[in-house]
Length: 325
Image 1 (tube, one colour):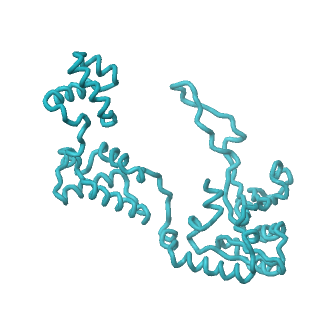
Image 2 (tube, one colour):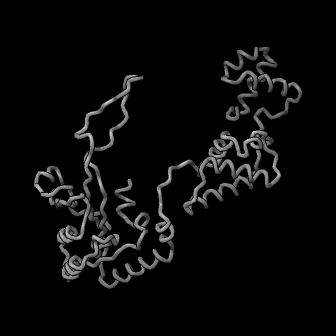
Image 3 (tube, one colour):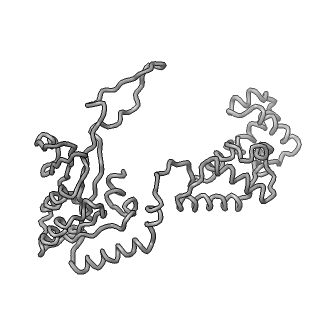
C-alpha cells in the first residue's frame, strides 16, 4: 500500500463517503486493499486533513543515520575481503539495536538476530548493497594488492616507456587461460517429473585447452596460441582457428618453459627488433622466466615487465577486460 499515491486513495475515500459506494466495489475498481481502504475511510471521517499514506517510520528500528553507519561498515568489510553473510548481518543488526537500547520486535529478542524481512527491506532501501557470491581470494593476494606495490610497477613501466619512446601500439599484454572443449549446457524446457534430461554435445566430458593471448594497449590482437593436451601435434587441431595461430602440445595441456620459448618466437608478428622494440607485460609464472626465453627477448627487442606477485586478479589487463567478461 505504500506505493499507492495519496491522490488515488483520497479519490477512493471520497467515493465511499460522498457517493455512498461500497468499500468492496471501490477497492476492486482502484485495485486497493479493502481493509486499508476501510481504515482510511474511518480516519477521513474523523479528520478530513489527515494523511492517507502509510507511516512506517514509527516501526523502524534504526534511524537513518544509524542505518547509514551499518551500510558503511558492510561496504568496508567487503572491501577488506571479510564480507558478512546474511545471517551475520542479521546478527549484527540485533547486537547494534541491543547495544543502543533501541525498541525492536520480540522475534529479534527470541532468536538473537533480525528477521529476514528486515534484511530484505534493508537491501531495498540501500540498492548499492546486494547479496553476492564472492571469489575465493588467498591471503597472499589480498595483502599483495596495495598502493605501494602497484605504484612500483607503474613507476618502472613509466621509465621504460620514456626510455624506449614507444606508444600504446608497441605495448603488449600476455596472459593464458584454460578453456574446456565441451561447454556447459544451457537450461531447457522439458517434461515435469522426468528424472533425466539430456542435451546433445560433442562429448560428455571436455578436455582442457590453454589459450595464450597477446593484445596491444590499442586493442590489436596477435594470432592466438593454443596448448593441447596431447603427445603429438597434428595440423587438424587448428581447424577453424584464426589465420596465423600457433598450436602446441603438452601432457597436461598447460604451458611450460620449453613451450613458452615458442610463444616468444610467435611474437614475430609484432615485427619487433632492437631498433623497433616492444614492451611485453605478463605475470611472473615460472614457465615465463627461463634463461633461454629472457635471452631471446633481449636479442629481439622484447622488453619484458612482470606484474607484481599475487596481484594479477586486479592488474592483469586481459583477465579484467577479455577473459573475465
